[in-house]
Image (tube, rainbow, N blue to C red; front, side, top):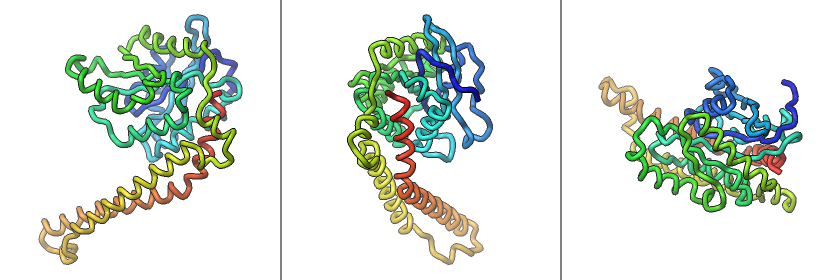
Length: 297
């Protein structure tokens, strides 16, 4: 790929799979980025599209969706940062803003979503929250009144910290004018000066990345999740069917044993994966911090 030219405004779009990231980028730019990023989600890479808006050369970075492949959020954030650095964006143009697309069709707030938001908070720090635009999508799928009260509660659950420190919440109505309005809000913030991330501040004063806020928080998250899985394993062991049911001629007994054993193996695999990720966390976080400290300055 050719090296990117100098850009006026550089924006990263993130969100869960199905939030409408690629559609938003194509709508705003008039481009034709590939929706879905290919058949194999594990090989997804960000995509860049450029266009002019109000005399500014805008570059939107469309990123792989969360919750859609075998990578955890930490690895996805690292991959986005690595791609930005590799393509030269970090060198030629610092990041001006982040658009978080969130579909209101997600009717509940899962632990992964809360942890993902907390991870982004730790990467950016409060001084950079004002560069975040939280953009809700999929409003046309439902009557607004039916979701307004539930949505107000949900947005308070997830983004209270962001919004109380400068981030804005904007509803996207799936029109080009709406997309351009969201981008204009970032242009206005960018004109007020650059934002320094918490990562950059901490890395200049601390020698070890594990001492940073995001490093400590991630380690704590892994340890809490491991403890949670271990508790589930303990409870599951107490429900173990009789060993004789493993080879029982009674279909119901044999099926119950199979279901129990399958669930047990899944829990063991989850625990093993988390323990491995905790051991390799220092290496992953080191790369993550290095990339994201260079793209927001």
